Length: 439
Image 1 (cartoon, rainbow, N blue to C red):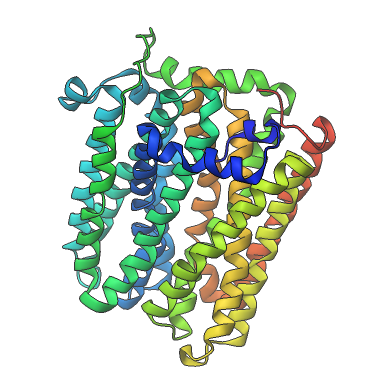
Image 2 (image 1 turned 90 degrees about the vertical axis):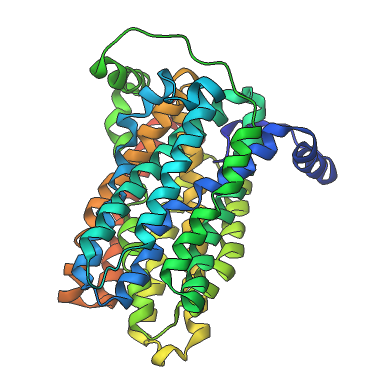
């Protein structure tokens, strides 16, 4: 969620930068609110994706089915279809009381909590259809929450404040991910999956409190146009600004995280197959991984202004794809019944660091591509485009592993990054190493 404007900001002493970063948390309620809202954003996705796969493995659901169930996050890829309507219309009942942005945020959080409760009372070992239905509902509610919180963040603060807002939102998001990852896995080992999912529903409360205390930005004026025009207007604007580079740039966005989406679908099933417990997985991927991810985030923030956007993208896609070879090594080495803990920690750490670095680079690039007047809709469009191809391909991952095994599967996902790296070189050659196409 880094803001590209940070790249051109004048340098200041480290102490002044720290003060400028920390002081608003105590003096600006928008910053406090975005921290809580970012936390709420970080909860749903893992619970319908990576964390849930641990439950499914325990329930003896076949790997091919687990791979197909990754498609339940399809709403995160299609959210651009309804994002423009959330920009233009108030939420029923709550909109009149809280305003357009906050009303939709609270409505979405209520739906997320209800969907989590629905998943909690399911039993995938005996009634998988129930889990599928409520997981799909959780994906729709979580994607809607993302859209409305991003819309609030972009409109509530002026452009010069967006870097700060994005930074605190990212911190909140990572803490929410930690709760939905490590927290849910620890709780599942101690109290069972039903208690874990119900606790996650309760953890949405800080986000709801943040929404209630947050200022409401001015609502956009009514605009003419039906369904097609509402959806098409931000797409048309983006294509017009990209011009001849529209196809390679959008292909770059679509392919950049494809290896990561395909790989992450089967990461936890690999860990479980090697004999690691939920507690082991939570400790390494979430607790230890949280600090590893912060390191990747800070490194990306430092490198982008120094070497340029396109060079950072190239490094990001190469590093993230190559890091899957660490998972291939883990699969080849074996977990020795869960005893090879440090081999597990190091290989997963390599993958997590590269993933975090690449993610921040891509977020910065997509932020540069979005125009201010269509920021929420175009950002939703770009994130959907980023996620859709990889998610669709991930649905086949279980079938591939049944034929090739885990080792060759992760070698294959690393090779997906080769054409993406070539696209980076093509776009950089046409636009230069320092800049993205002009927004």
